[in-house]
Length: 75
Image (cartoon, rainbow, N blue to C red; front, side, top):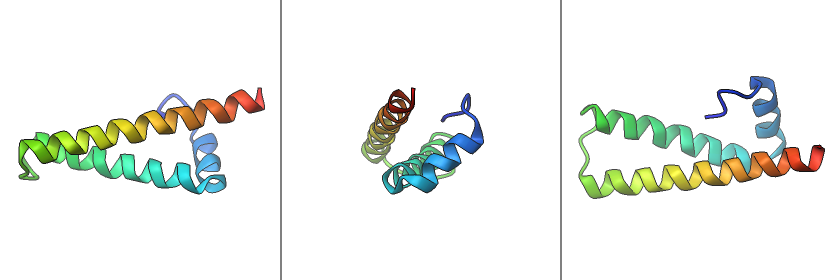
């Protein structure tokens, strides 16, 4: 996520906004767990995996809103 953004910009936003940092870290954690579940390393049931994917998507949506809002104000 935010692969096309300057790493320094993302890190600066994480330092300046606690909520952005929390959501970013949550998204990274969920991304890793979902990946592990999909390749069979993390054994979880389908309902749990679906819930994790839903949480990950919600975190991503909120992060993108925050990112867009930050740069809309700066521009």
